[in-house]
Length: 121
Image (cartoon, helix red, strand yellow):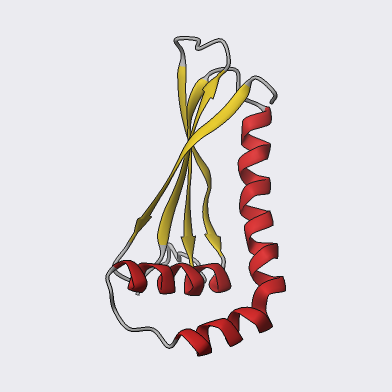
């Protein structure tokens, strides 16, 4: 992994304030090959999604109750740090396997996905 270096992080929000987290990385030798990978599909991180939703509202210059946001963050910081650690752990797990430059994406949601049922009716 020492030869692979992240160089750009992108966050793309959906209308529901879920977001797509993408990390672009380069191989130190600047090899010509490129890889793109989805990071285990979708992760359920409700605390991170709420915190990032507040960031989005501030970017849009919408009002947020900042003292309430800080109190909530203070009570949930352990969960937020755990969620960030899980996301970065999945990214680092991907990077350890890479030999080329590329990108890794992961959809982060505050809602759990309902299991898909193939049964009709």
